[in-house]
Length: 460
Image 1 (tube, rainbow, N blue to C red):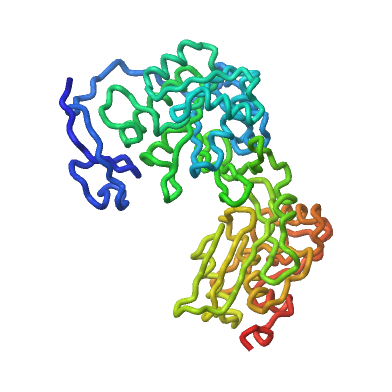
Image 2: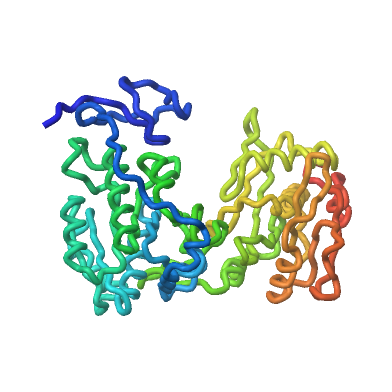
């Protein structure tokens, strides 16, 4: 047996170092080097017979690809781009207890009626999985179980079922290979086990779903190369205090990466939310200051959500800026623009901003809604009812158009809204959307259109 030696692997990029350093020299990340073992010394790569090279035109005459498998969950199919692709490897990450195993168990149990599926758990025994399946109401489905963490044993188990089409691995950080001496969850074990599973999936045309733990920073634990090896990376998001869950695609070789699926956690597991806007707005706060409705866009789906803010006097030397569900840096930019371009001072105020429902907004179209919410809270004046806002704000105070504006407005009209503050654009046909449109080209126009002025501030 080859003598093992100690090395240090970077969990961010997979680079190897002979000794520990605080910073990885390859990717410049801090505190990412972990102790690992390497088997023997590297040997020269053997030269084999060359492989066959095909032209692109040759591929068009080959056998057509197999159809996708519908998961029977429309929200999951939407996120995946139309369903599961045979031979693909999917990685699902999320915080502990967010519902990853529950979601995957529900999907695999429903699919097992049409496609043979095996659920392999490295964290729970078969009896524990049966109890959870009974609670979720899927105990009668022909889903097969196995409890193992040994990679070679897992692959042998799958080969014993040649009709198997879907394999669930819960979780990839618990798997280990006998050929490596390092402990399960280390960089080398996660990378090696994932590589073997990906190779097996491509060779046997089997769908493999990997469940992955996340670090305290929110990234999937293990080397970052793990996300490059798989075909699809999904993140399951949500706040512990809310019953909403968001399934978001951050990488997808077979579909778009900006689609989301919305679920609601209940006693019987995760339930699909077909119309998220209605559900989020059902919990809308009463008609009070600091509340603004934003018409966002997640993939091809328009979603209306509430943005709340509270502007209050500070008791500290440095005012606080607390944000949940949005970018803290962008909030600082919006307040600076309001101060410099509209003469509204937030200097001696604490600001608290929250996106209700546990949602996380990334698109800059929320700038105008955030600005309206901040000004409303500062002046303690409620915004007009049944009104929504969207638009991107620049550093000079201009309000810029955003994508698919008519789609956002039609969704608002369907939910009973009557007025919208939007960027000035020639692409909006006001007659077709059926709303009272107020076009805003500069941030000053928003303040004047809402009949708000610094004279009405609580500072006086």
